[in-house]
Image (cartoon, rainbow, N blue to C red; front, side):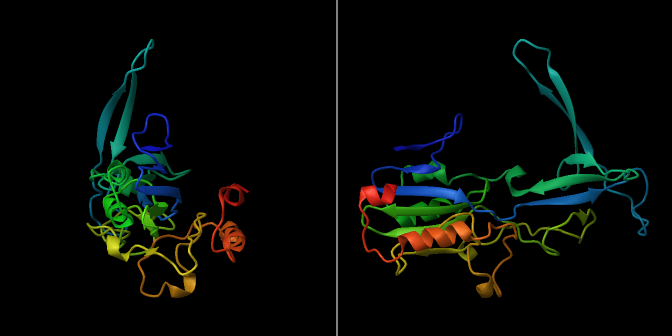
Length: 242
């Protein structure tokens, strides 16, 4: 295995194993929502229902050569509290995220043993961490692209603004977007894929597609890459580096 990694992380976001090579850019899918919580000491506004009581966890963080740091983390059924609202009268924001849930992680941990682009793509069906736009190729000449990263299915809304933290508002389905419904392709006629944090599929083709997010890059870098790569069947190492 050869590639580029991050210090302390046992994966290779870009690399090859002699059979399959891959690279990544951020996928930009929306896997995190915020909720308005509280107040926890009185019934919810207009409902008469008691607010769900959070729990408080005591975290001890041991620091070499210094005193242990104690952090108290308040956790709601959606996730931990981040901060009280400004002049919020007892209201706070909580965070819910795919990457905070106890889910299996495969992805790059299995990529090192793959031999084909199909095997590499299958390895990322369980990848609840950061969404990535994954490009890959194998030693048969096949190439592929896949948006990876488990993305929630929201029962209501799109999570663009904080939702009220009562049941039915901003809830998620138990299972994420099915992997087979995530955008991906193999062996395009052009002979290459472009990945630069851009929208993974054209907006005009999204009818009926799962909601994946709104915070894509504007597409200018992707368009420029396409200009540079188009019109040539092959490129040598010097042209590729340039």
